Amino acid sequence: MPSSADRAPTTRVPTIIVQGGAGANPAEAGDYRQGVRDAALAGWRVLADGGAALDALERAVRALEDDPRFNAGRGSVLNRDGAVEVDASIMEGDRLQCGAVAALSRIANPITVARRVLESRRQVLLVGEGALAFARSVGIPECDPASLVTDRQRKRHAELARQPATRGGGTVGAVALDRNGTIAAATSTGGTPGKLPGRVGDSALIGCGTYADSSIGGVSCTGDGEAIMRVVLGHRALRYLKDADDPDYAAKVAVDLLVDEGGGQGGLILIDWRGRVGFATSTRLMPVAMMSPALDEPRVPF
Ligand code: ASP
Image (cartoon, rainbow, N blue to C red; front, side, top):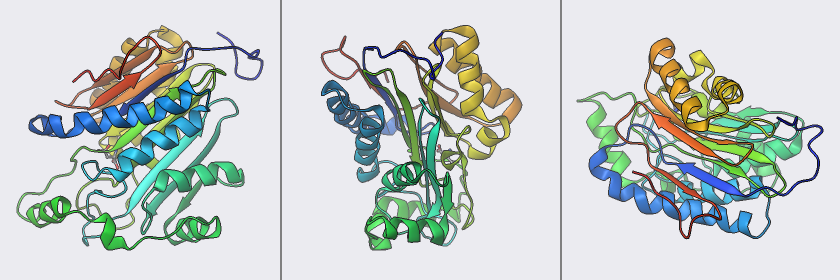
C-alpha cells in the first residue's frame, strides 16, 4: 500500500459516495432518494471534469445542505431552544489537512466555512461566535436564522416535548477519490433534535465523524454522536480498512464497534485508496448514492 507522502503521480478511477443520515424513517425513503442521487451527481461532475476531491465534496454536501429534507444547513433539526446550530468538517487525505466548525448559527452552508478553515491552515476547529466571525472575515455571508428553519422541523420540535427523541437521521456526508489519487471526506449536520445549546457532535470532530488518509481511504459517519465519539469511529474504521483491505467488511466491523463498544446506533460510508466503496448501518435506513465511471447513473442502493 503506498504512503501518501511518496505516492507517485498516478491516474485513479474517480469515485464518489454520499450519505443522507442513519436513522431516517424508512417510510420516507422516497424523499431521500432523489436528494442523495442529485448530490452524488453534482459531486461526480466535478470529478469527471478532472476536478479535485475537495471540490467534489463541497459541491455534493452543499446540495444536501440546501435540500430541506436533510438535517444539515436549511432543514436542520432545532435545539432545545428552537434554534439551528450546526456542525461540519472536511478533510483532505494527502497532507491530512482538515477544517471544522461547530455550534454555528446563521450560516446556510457550513461545509464551505469548514473548507475555508482547512484552507487557512492555522486552525482545525472553530466554534460558535468565533466560527461566525471567521466566516464573515472570509466573505461568507450570514443568513437570516429563520431561513434555515423549516415547517417540518418546527412541528417536530413541538412534538419533542411530548415524545423526546435523541436522533432523527438526515445528517449528510460524502467521500471522494479524484484522478490524482487524493481522497477527501466531509460531514455536515444540524445534530440531534432538542440538543442542548452548545452541544457538539461527532460530525465536527476529525477522527470521529470524518477522516481521510489518501494512502488508506476516507470515511463519513452518522448516528449517535456521543457513541461515535466514544469509539473514535472514523479513525477506527480506516484502521479496519487498512488491516482487512475490504471496504464493506471494514464498514460492518466499524458499525459493530459502534453498537457493541460505543453503545449507540449509526452507519458510515467509505472509499479505499483503490476506489472501492463500502457502507454499513445498524439502523433501518441510511440513504446512500454513489457514482463512478463504471456506472451510467448514480447507484442508489436503498
Ligand atoms: N451524528 C450526528 C450528531 O450526533 C447526528 C446524526 O448523524 O444523525 O450530531
